[in-house]
Length: 147
Length: 134
Image (cartoon, rainbow over all chains, first blue to last red):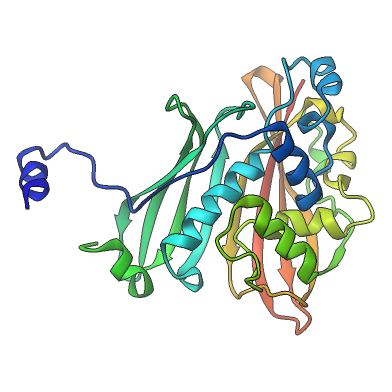
């Protein structure tokens, strides 16, 4: 296939993502819904006056909302019983209106497990969350293809 | 100075029933394909603690810092068994580390939670790292 040939020509070409999943732009309404659904009542995510008093220009998304998006993408991609661990670092604040795309790429293949590099970025490509998931190689084998 | 006396501090235990309706609402809100799926999604334990605690923000309040200065730095889950609607989960949290960066401008607090279910089975470990802007 042409794509395979192209990849063969350029050893530095990034591997195709294991998944790439986009979510709708994050609205104030979504932050209010997530506040209720998650029990995270920190006013900094829903009360503009509070956020401004704390030195922020406006409310901003819960980091855990964006991590939940990554979780949705993981659940959709492969068998969840094969997910051993899932961790992220919150790299930058996710602003209102951000349209998040979650991606995973194979980072490391071991005898029993595969480590995926995870990233959540906004529509401008700015990285918001960066992390890893370790999945069982046996149950995720079909998802990961040649890995 | 870093107040290392926090290390080893235990937060109040949280006993949380995984309410089917709340689980469904959470799944629907985050855009999961099947909102009726009875298994908790990967980040649900973080929410469960706040949803079912008498003091949802105890993990910040017990640090005795200004909540507006606290940001989430890192979050990790290690899974041992599924968590399902109807389960009764016990969450035990201890402050496992406190350290500073940038000459004390940033204070990091690491909290480790062990989650066990109604059968005493160890279902997950959760690590939350908070950063406080001094």
